[in-house]
Image 1: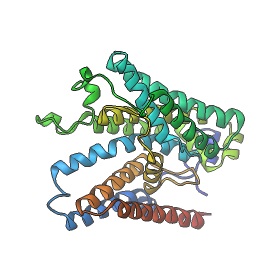
Image 2 (image 1 turned 45 degrees about the horizontal axis):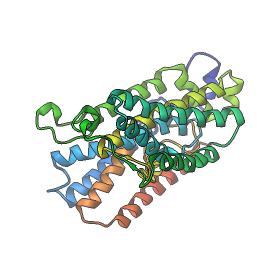
Image 3 (image 1 turned 60 degrees about the vertical axis):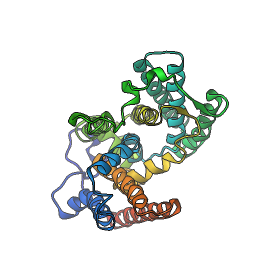
Image 4 (image 1 turned 120 degrees about the horizontal axis):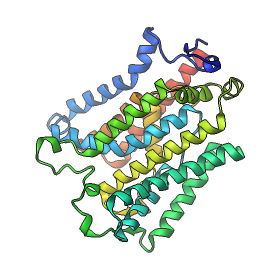
Length: 340
């Protein structure tokens, strides 16, 4: 297997991520080609409702929450891991934010509290995986149930915490608002946050030693360990960063709903994983891009939005989405067989 030319002993453990061959270009552009195809289909089928400026703004808002969580999931899956607790953690973090606002904590501190809650969950997951050696699947499956229970238990009866109306109209209630009429308000703050975080995570993966270690672990963890990569520290940092990003996604979820809903975000982890897999990140680890994951998130939002515009029922959307995921996973499997 060819390798990336980087300094240090980690070189031998990292598969090629760069190159000018047509196969590498096709691998990079495939998620964008799929996104363009989906947009073309729905633009032809629903030209008056789908491809409008207002609907494109709706798509950006719909993609923001899943897209931010997908950034962390991309790093996790590249290491060969998985996180099934994303939806439950988002629900728990929204309840934390609502509770803090209920106690008249300033919005900035309430938002920080929700993000710190996500960080705490990420650190817990990373610690259980690295210190005890448990499987990421088992750890996050357990946390999926535990965090949902924690969210319901802390929210009280009904499972929903409503913050005071005094904070309506403030920035914490406007991150995904489409009500602005001035030109600089046409795109709300949330999608800009997604863009900045995407550039940051992409830069980490491509230009830092930490990013090279992430790819090395996912490609061959044993080889990475023999090459001097600190597996324990790298995985703990990956899950911690992912927890922070889940906390930010929860902040966006809270802003959109303006409530802490312990029963919300059910199945979000499947949407996030699907976006990452559709975007070309290999479930076997060692391969993936931020651009692909964001394209995958947009594709999922476009499919759901387009099906709504065409009047399809929910079960049809689920079948279409499942089919896309199956095709993406099959292509990933075939690609890995050819390169084996």
